[in-house]
Image 1 (tube, rainbow, N blue to C red):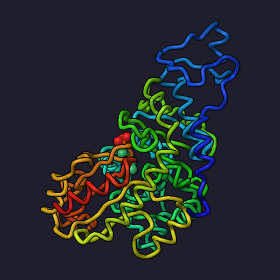
Image 2 (image 1 turned 90 degrees about the vertical axis):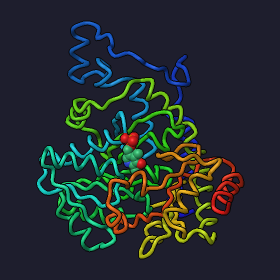
Image 3 (image 1 turned 135 degrees about the vertical axis):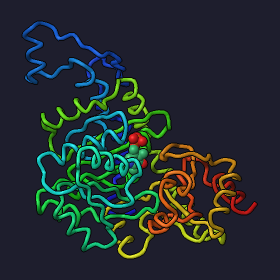
Image 4 (image 1 turned 135 degrees about the horizontal axis):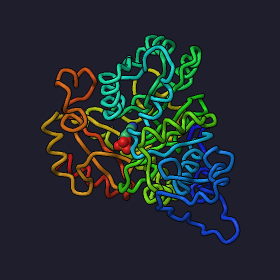
Amino acid sequence: MSSNDNSTGMRTRCVHLGGRPEGNEPFVPTIAQSTVFNLGTAEEAEAIFSGEKPGYAYTRFGNPTVQKLAEAVASLEGGTGAMVTSSGNAATLCAVTIAMAGRKGSLVTHPDIYGGSHELLGILSDTFGLQVNVVNPSDEAAWLKAVWQAGAVLLETPSNPLMRLIDLRSTVEAAHGNGAQVIVDNTVATPFNQRPFSFGADWVVQSTTKYLNGHSNVVGGCLVKREKLLAEDRRVHKNLGGTVNAMEAWLVLRGLRTFALRMEAHNRNGEAIADWLSRHSAVSKVYYPGRGEGRQEEIFAQQMSGGSGFLAFELAGGGEAAEQFLNRMRLVTHAVSLGGMESLATRPAMSSHRGMSPEARREAGIADGLIRLSVGTEGLDDLIADLRQALEQ
Ligand SMILES: *Cc1c(COP(=O)(O)O)cnc(C)c1O
């Protein structure tokens, strides 16, 4: 574990999210499944609408259960304020809209950002003329130059599925040199393993669908701000409309109670399976955070305290071997997504990256024999036994 490890504090924080109940309050937050709230007298309503007195009017504007989730995620990421959204993509849209407001220059991002974010930026670019500049961070000088000229920056580290890391400290420094905000998608690393705010990032985006909820039963998102949320930030959030109801927020709050415990297990299993796969003769390459060429190891030590349970590996036998592997799995399920307690595997060439031409895929490093594996919290021996039989049958 490197010096930015914070697992003990994180364990306690997860169990006590929301703080001690006052008086006779329930320990578990109530589910305020109501669209409207009593505004009281005309004077009280005025105080709520003007923001003079805290209170709720309509769930799209704010809701007590949803607010508890916002505070919980802000606390885990080490941010000051947060806004909950109906999906990770809705959080990215909201963060990009806020960060680009009034800015000249393009939104800088990289080629191996999450596929859904890539498509979202394509739509914003085609429909509204958002200028998007896609730059490869492995050419560090070109990346930092583009970042320095950016209107805002949207990045994801580790990337998906090749687990490439981007240096947060130098990126933030370059962006701030010209007043650009940096949005970090921290879905894969999670705040358990990486806290972008400690490197000066402005926004963190989370798909709570993944590790934060962890139970594969909610699609949701959250955007967290390092500094205090402004009235303008809230105005964008409520009017873009990707907000949630109390029940969904409550399910994620419930998932968060075990977040630290689950991440300890994901980290342990992920690392052990990356090691096991790299020793297997049927596997030609393993992608796991901190293990790539160049400065990857150094960046890992600087900004991550664990690798999570998400990895990818290439089968020496190519596409055919990858198909056979998927068909032979017994414990691991063939399914998209990541971050649940159950192990899932896909073949990017036929799922997340099927829209690309074979040449474009090769250029992006997505081999036909590449398998993406979200390592769950099952017993390590059971997982290895399943991988072994699927590789060797
Ligand atoms: C899944 C995912 C998203 C999008 O989240 P949804 O909840 O599916 O909208 C964004 N970024 C990353 C890294 C993801 O894995």
